Image 1 (cartoon, rainbow, N blue to C red):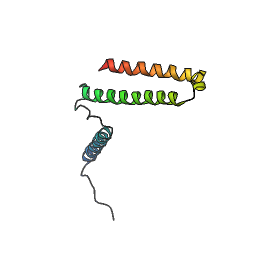
Image 2 (cartoon, one colour):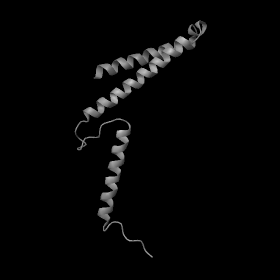
Image 3 (spheres, rainbow, N blue to C red):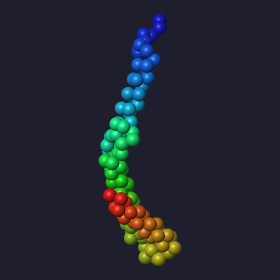
Image 4 (cartoon, rainbow, N blue to C red):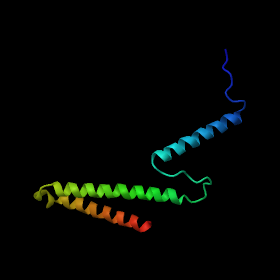
Length: 105
């Protein structure tokens, strides 16, 4: 016994597919805490970009804090080693990146 058609035409099937894809993308953005994309793709997503920059700033700041805590928790002999110097160099570059993000806003 053949199954009844869910959609009367191929066009309706494609429209339903596009609608499901749009809802899926919107749900993904909301899970990440980002505002929805603009209705017209050529319009700037200023609010969305600001939210993404804020997330990047938060993550980079957290990484910098963890690196500093890791360095401070190590022994004094380790802190004088070349590995510690390499870690501090990375930490310094990371802190520069965070300050550059501050300048973007």
